[in-house]
Length: 358
Image (cartoon, rainbow, N blue to C red; front, side):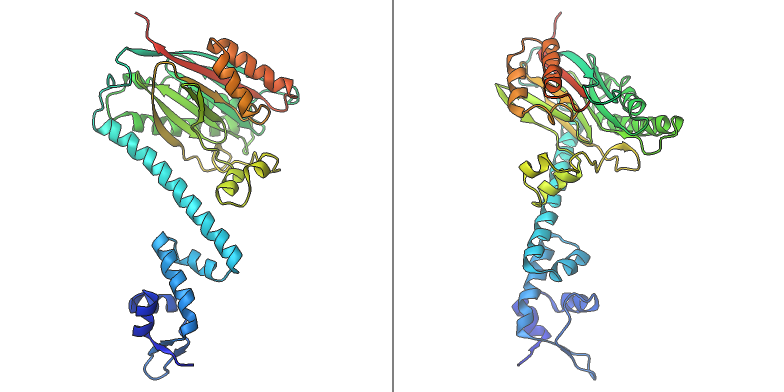
């Protein structure tokens, strides 16, 4: 078998000689022969396929250590690893896109009057939390006022105090009163306060593994600033269509994103409630931050996972589209969850964007 010089192999594989030397040192692409006297590297033509794969994976931005792992796998498993890597890259890009949009709006001094309608806006709201029919106690917290909408779903021995503490850290934050450009920092500070409050609640109850999700929206006067950690959810009903605007931070959701589970399989998976992000319990407390432009007629639903785990999305849509006011909407949604066995605590906040009075 005729071997290729490093220069010829570099041209054929579209990898530079410098990169080939690095990949040899890392054990990623070992030459077929190294001259013992000169150290000159030669490669077999059969190594071109792996070399090109390495080049393609580098173009995706995959770290070298992960490329080495992928190259050692059978083709089917390697494909799954590439799919998983790219799903993570897309999720990271989406999170950075939202953050970039957030920063552009605030750093450019976006005029809060330049919304879809020039009329001053406000929110009309209702909140309801229920123990359900199976759990011994309610560890959820639901809260709504003219500035803050929030749902938190606690877990562990101090789950109830943890969820209340997380929401409490946001109650005094008036986003509408903040100077332009300070909202992002204020939200991050509030997340840090919430994390400390949750740890304090867990320590007071001697329940170190306790924690909570937190999904909150703060009214700025023309927008709603979203803070999201965990698997509570936000839905938006706009022009009759229902949109889910949060992403669950769960092991199962990550498996769906990676292509290892279908959505149908995820719905009944035994680890469907296992969180990868939360406040407390040693979990990652990184929050998703996003700005939602408000339109008159929008209706938002914030809910703990006790609602969507029991009630189909079609039923949630029907209630949100048909209820005249937020109060009957939250009552009907909780009643539907309990009517389907009430297997979990369920909390709902419904808020309508309306023209401000006076």
